[in-house]
Image 1 (cartoon, each protein chain N blue to C red):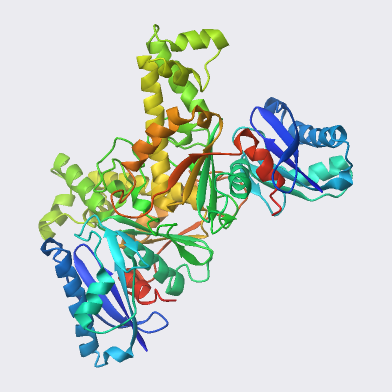
Image 2 (image 1 turned 60 degrees about the vertical axis):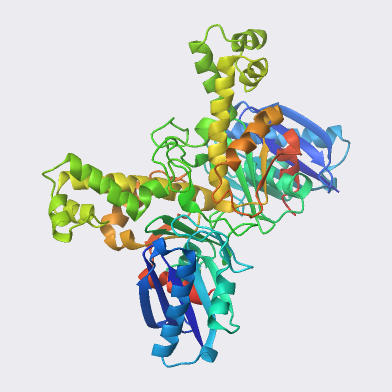
Length: 317
Length: 317
């Protein structure tokens, strides 16, 4: 039997056929086209499933279940997205609409995208074998996933784990969610790009402009690349970014003291340029940091860009 | 059989003889005298236990267990306080020292004071029958207790639940823990008193001075009392205080989505003057607040000042 996992992002919909161990056997993606609205997105996801089944030359009967990782707050029980920030999913009955599209019954699971990414790390990645773990995903936003006693935790109404929507700078940068100063507004890739652009505009001689001109756009890599070459303004961006990231991570460690804190998403690909200073900053701030207890390990995600697909696919476990 | 619970605070040590339902049968307290050091505190707690047993006219054999709620991070397994902010308990083997003092074996449990308060609400108070709950205690600091799936959660190293040490205003007010801008620095009774004093000093005609002169000191009640009489400066203090409190509570709701959020500690005694505007502010900020899901109830603690004693006494459950 095969599993299909769908990772619904603000920019792309990625989906894959996955085996029971979390190995991806075939992967495809299409643009989300969020501006076309929620109905379009559900149709695009359904078509992508059909496309995978056709390309992999299996039948619908070979698929044990379909799992979807979606942004927003999810009513897992009823297979609905209740509310999302970046896509037009408000009270959207995704499961029912997909079953209608397929014209047949099939088990469809849906959970928050960050929960799916955390679940992938737990079943097949960096947090395998650990009972208490936190995962964040640094992408368009800051997604969070909580694993307590070996299970995904999402609160009594399935809406918990919105770790990115924790205010770390009251009266700071406005967030899409309506609050002001959310961690997401400082630690998402989107925020890193904002900080990069702002700093570059203040420093017209910064190396960051070279990378900008090369790519024709600011990216989450621009400041890291320029900082690596010794550019002072870029180093300031990276330092500020890591400072906020550490602040939010220490917040979570002081709350959860997880055995493993996993970081995924594009920015995590910066590797030790990100992790070495991050661990240093976090260590100095954790509550009771000098006492003799074991400390949370801060590590990169192992399932990488595939986390969303793998975690969604194995949601039925 | 009887249980003895000890609530070790920065100012007083309160202890009580408790029955199996969480009812306090006898209660006594002594000053903590934190400045005399950790050894003195352990001796004072032991003497208080002996005093309770003697006054209640029972013997040591009638006591099933002793529980201690202490500030700081606790090694529950080994009965030690590893680290505390406000009292001199660093790597202090409380259980062993008390057994030495008593000169006999007895079951002694120890946990974080805020965990004990949360546990009291779960076994005998506002969160009875609920599976997921958060409790905070607004006192010298902001203590936190997390109940997930009907159990106290404190992370893989027993140091979790430090909800007060979550930064909500980066580069804000310095905290005793070494970080800057912790929730505790804005929402503890200590912080409320600081805000009250500062605002009163800017407003020499404020009613707050009358209450100050009456009591000879600033208290957590000063601003609430004056605000209730219509004093403008006092209203600003109360509004700011509740604003920060709501910010931190919404942070926790976005993370945990608990069924019940319980608030204890002296400030919670302000009742609806605190809770009505607090619920209003929180409601407008919770992630996905307008979606159709059930919302966290924000309520006052029911076990009141006795929470620490009751929760500590019943830690063995």
